[in-house]
Length: 362
Image 1 (cartoon, rainbow, N blue to C red):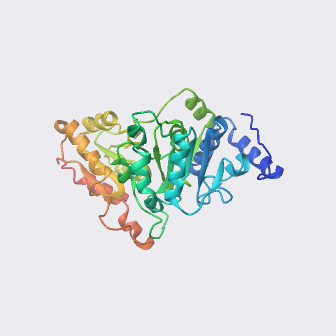
Image 2 (cartoon, rainbow, N blue to C red):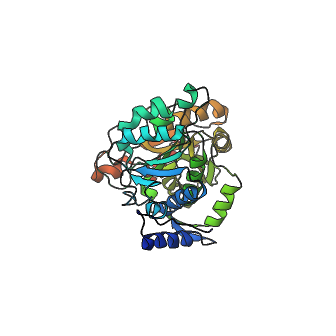
Image 3 (cartoon, rainbow, N blue to C red):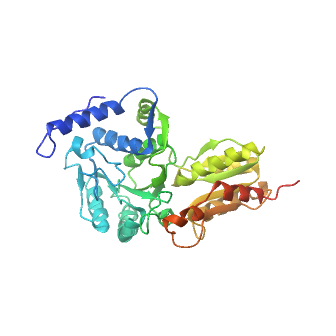
């Protein structure tokens, strides 16, 4: 890929050269070790190169490159007109993005932290989610709201929360949450391409996870129109029970399945990937095969996405169940302080305890 960088009053020649060099490195063919943070960054850069209507903005995403450095280098390469900082006003950020989306642009905005998005909740529910329906399809809403969410980083109050249920409950929004480095790239590209608004929930504790990823193959996959939307993934095959997880809980579910295997129990792990739309077919096919299931999520269990998953599986696979579906979730209390976080989050031991409670016959 050839990268053309315009040097203007906002971008020095040296900075532009560094950005082009970083882009060239990302263009290297074959598998390479990438973090999820870099995969997300590359996805935005590729989308911005491919479509001049894509722009990125939010608090500290420009000069700083974001609190988690997910937007690092975008202002240097694309200038302040396409990647810029905003005032600390989440409602204003979302409101401005709505106006831009109505007028043919594709804004990608960052809420910086999960609980920081709550001041913008009215805009999201009343306008972002409803504009297409309100105008009988005349106005589309091609915008992505990136939300670093969930725990695992020892964040203080307002910096760690699992807010996905609010958005999944809101008709008119898509809700994506990647759990792997490759999905970070492919799902963000798909979200930016979507003509519908996407809440893109990024597990903070997975930003620094690494994997061998072939960006060239992922780009070719994207260009071919391959989609993950509404398609769960079998992260680990198994026969005895199904662990259903998404986002930050997927690595924990995989670790539990690996531990169970040492004890002779085969657990299948399903990575839901997109909460809305939801892949009933893949999830229920797994449960029909194994006959037992545990749903794992960091969010509170009451009135949650995990509740909905249990209900959907029970409605579609009831006669295949050998035991009630169980859940391992965060407790129904406000997110705790960093020192208590490990008690609150789903763990391998809690998952294995739930698996042991699935009414096995001796």
